[in-house]
Image (cartoon, rainbow, N blue to C red; front, side, top):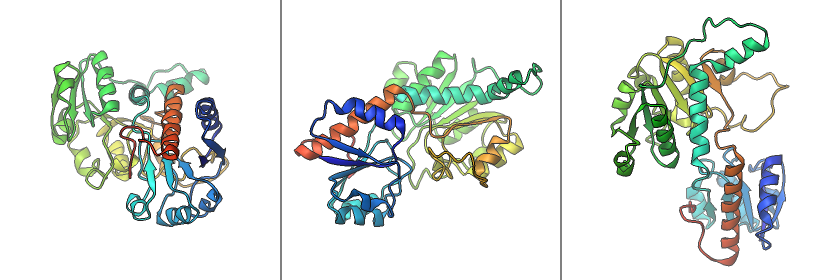
Length: 333
């Protein structure tokens, strides 16, 4: 079983090579270039390709891969927005993903972003480095006793609900499929609709799936329904938020603090070092605000999560080679 691993970073190679000793039937070749229609031809002679969220797995990419005999696309992430699934089905290709990896890692990062943005930790850190010990402009809000609204209470959202409970917050959940056990355990106080989340929450965190219905669910209208000065966090999917509406909400003061690990326009920036370039991007606008903290799709990034990603991806490669069942909930098509 030969797999071409696209978009390789040093940490990818390290985590996969560490696990490969348990998969002697799987051979991986690592390349730094990302998977696009232009680079798909590199997969000649391989059985599968492995890609991440910032790949371009369009119909053209899939057509080229299929023509080369590639039958499997291994997404080493939970999301598969980068894949044209309908076309993959049409040409008879298998697509798998990693359904869950260290949900606590993402939930912890979400809370870290909320705290950093709310308490202006990034600003305070830079001031102390410059021997400026003034506190003006750094005032935040105490989370204890406040209300957290968690949109999407799957594994990651549920983990954040537990963290918020530990802070002494009231937790409201919103989900198409409410998890009653979270209510029974006292982790979620109540499941409510989106409008109630917007109206009652002092902190809102997104963990919903991105689809046609949820695209730009955070927009001018929904932001207008939120409490003044709300703490807003997105570690889910960038497309859940209309970025320009978010900027307007920050400028108006409706959003008092924002912690973002994802944003809709991020794709060409994800995991790229563009420090030497002059670019016109929404990140420059967002980072100009003192109450915004941004990271680059980093929420999952712990050693435990990388190990889990490697194991599930390699398990699926092995299953494809042996004709056995893929990892539970990992099959996209």
